Image (cartoon, rainbow, N blue to C red; front, side, top):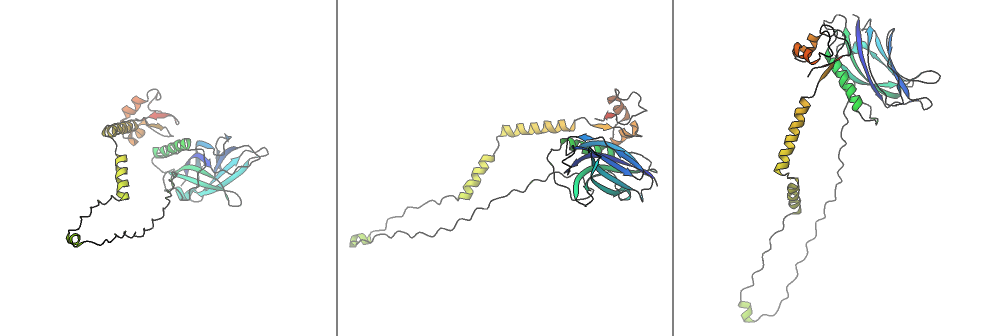
Length: 299
């Protein structure tokens, strides 16, 4: 059964570019005879394409998606790397966010490309769901907020973009203190005592108070150092509560896709149609007609 493949090209990383050509890149996607290209991103070895496109799939059982990253050259465009994906492997997986490892003709990894994919069959009751748009928007936001330093390739297939894991702390083990050898007690000088002295009672030895172990002393010092005064603790809780309230009250937008209706968008976000229309009167001149690409404020 024929269908269509919705693809969002997000960004590329770890690109092994040609040093003799300018750092200008674009992505070409092809399913059978259907082909689309992204805009050219200039002057970056980690290009962020942020392009949405759709490809018709005549036969998902046999068709495959051809992914190519190209570099614009003075004598023709150079293929940095490519990869192939069977459409049948993603027809039942819903929305997928995945880093594809693009390889050269010698099968060496030359770049990584992040794509958001969703297959829609022609017999589906609903041609589009906001799930794909949300996943694509989140991937684009992460791409815009990501650092410029290249990150390591992801080894797992069909997983969301991994977050950077913290490095394990290296603790230098200090050598255990050698047990100190017991010191011999000084011998008391023996004097010849008179008979009167020998019958006298021995002098009472002074009692010594055992010193606190060094480990307990350090633990008590750390406990005193980590104690936070009550006013600062209350103030920190108030600030955290205010930040959480502002985060929950932040505005949420939805980008209109093809065949969307105002009723379906409102039901997906569990809102009333009247409330969504009231928030977007400047955008929705006619509530019965929605245009792909419009941004509707949901909250």
